[in-house]
Image (cartoon, rainbow, N blue to C red; front, side, top):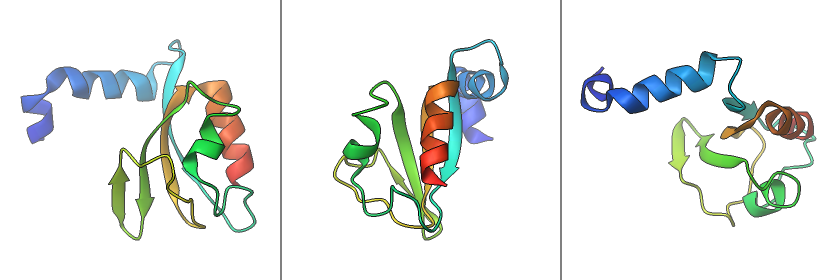
Length: 98
């Protein structure tokens, strides 16, 4: 609630990104499941080769968040990737993650 008052434009932007089907940019959470090809891969090796315009905003791990994760962070089974990108890129990343 405080964020809505202090930064209303950020809150509005996130609402639009999450719900407006006409925008090219989306935000999604992607779970890394057992057997994923992403397990033990560095973030840079996941995004840069095939999805250079997709931004990883955070990783949810062990109940907390790693915000602005470093590109050398290794992805673990059970991580939730919070990403911003096009629908096509997010779907492709999700397919490889799970």
